[in-house]
Length: 180
Image (cartoon, rainbow, N blue to C red; front, side):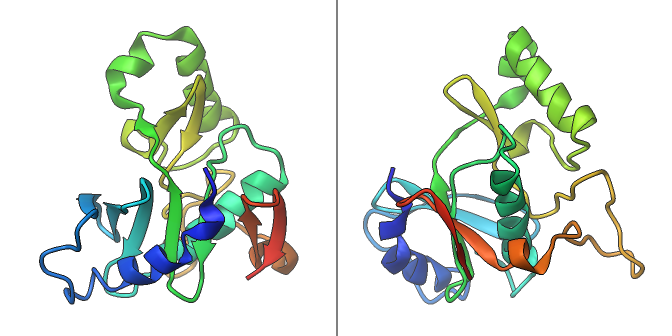
């Protein structure tokens, strides 16, 4: 799916959190929300993750996902981050759920590798999804790499990424990284 054409919808989705669209425009559906973000399905079938109250999670998530892509981690999702709208866009994956996890050795092995071998934090079944037979992490807002969760002030923070990696995003159109 071409995520590069999602900018206009990302700009529209960025306005949803402020409450300026009630009801949602035709073709939009609210999928759910967590502590920091709300997810919407756009008329193009893509998922748009919008921050609540200007939290930092979306930019952090883009940095983590980009790090995974750059290092060829199998569990990196397809995504596009639009920094001007501060919206994360990705395909709508099938959320893993415990029943799928429990009934497949391959899936269970992938989940255990994500949790224990790669020490990806916050990798429970609601934050994992299937892309065919591949498990991907779909919520990386509170994820760190290497199990290091908290900074000096006790807040979650992104992994130590080089400024070169931290300032890039993955372009699904050309399959390359670009600067934010």
